[in-house]
Image 1 (cartoon, rainbow, N blue to C red):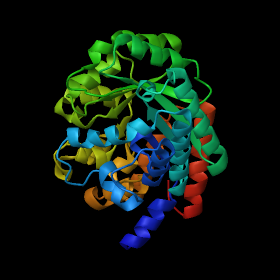
Image 2 (cartoon, one colour; image 1 turned 180 degrees about the vertical axis):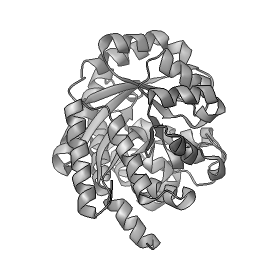
Image 3 (cartoon, rainbow, N blue to C red; image 1 turned 30 degrees about the vertical axis):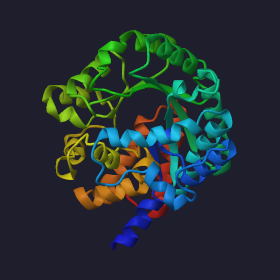
Image 4 (cartoon, rainbow, N blue to C red; image 1 turned 120 degrees about the horizontal axis):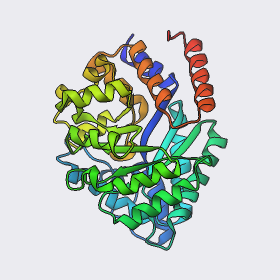
Length: 348
């Protein structure tokens, strides 16, 4: 199959995206409108000239450079209307790539500079996603992030607020931020509360920190999934534990290279993990910041690692298995995917 035909098939495949950040998914044209509504002059006046301020190059030098793009966008995500709009547009962008299920994560405490409460922020995200579900025919859920550099009370407040919306679109809580400076053991109390309140947990770990952070996240914070986990291979015994427990890894190939979680594609461990039988999933992380989409992520795996269509479908179905959905919803999603794959003539 030629490259164009391959991309067309990958685009048509039903997909999931379990790891996508709200503030990394703001369309340039949306930011222009949000700035205009606020009376703020941006350093560029059209979509194409604004992109360099929002998106990294493939030659991105560091995680610090990568994160600077969020500082540019976040000031415009401080009202309910803006947050709801971006959540809605993430559902729209997912549907454009036949991404049938998306989990959108965001840090409520980062959207409060104009007076919103953590709970109000959650409500606006959920409203946007629900509207997107109705209009674009996909499923969408939210994940509330606790930030590593935030204090205990702020993070406990996020868990409490998120727990109130379980069953109403809130799927889980997460821990993100400076992994190297704030290891997971500092957050045992916060995530003990999440377990008490019955809300699932995913943790960014093994990205800017070593495999020990994955062990801590799973065994002490109760992580049902791990965000990234690219450094898991540094400790074979911890990798074996993750394999035995079937802890899903939310891998984000394009951003993992850009943030220097790994140095280059030659040492990116996704093929190694897949061949070992780890429950690997493929996700976008920050579509606008990284200049990616879920179809492109799969295309890269085919080109750089020789994944066959049937192997890519296995990765997709791993995502269905790992989704933070009720069993009945997950079974329905799986059936939908199997029917679409059959219609495309793709074996599963």
